[in-house]
Length: 205
Image 1 (spheres, rainbow, N blue to C red):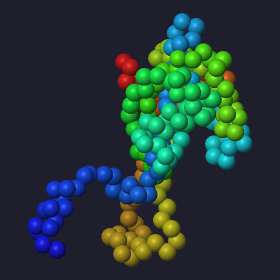
Image 2 (image 1 turned 30 degrees about the vertical axis):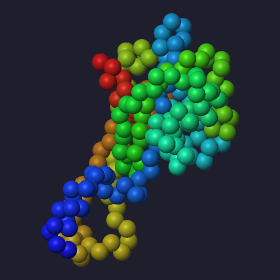
Image 3 (image 1 turned 180 degrees about the horizontal axis):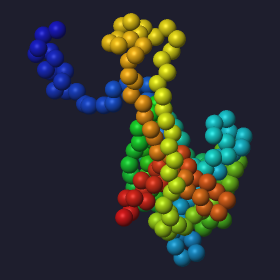
């Protein structure tokens, strides 16, 4: 290939994440609602019948499907399906940050406001065990507990150590990841939900 051809390709190239074809996009909504004179965040407890992470606490959200014109549409669609509300019950949705997970997914986050009373929420029992709210002020006034998870590198059997410098003595990079834990009454919020929540609370300072 000639230099000119490469230059033309680079001029028209839009940067993206290397390996993006293997990455799944997810979209979640951080719903806020007025309750008892102050703002509350709305959380879900995943149905105990769910195959993945049953009983864990999360925000509404899920995988971005082909039917979603924008990533934002997936967050709103999932919130409607899971909370049993309509599009008219969600207003002023704003993009927040996104997270690239080491487990092969990008999580896009949005902050929106529910303009419906709490008793209008009718969770989908196939996905949601229960819905509860926590005053936003609780998270602003209480720091999470922080614990750590270590990721070790374990090459598969048959890995060609003979092809790399230092062979079996190669020093792999390991990773330590923070895990945030918020405890509110009898609820424990941790994992990806707590990570997104912590970032959102920090952004309000």
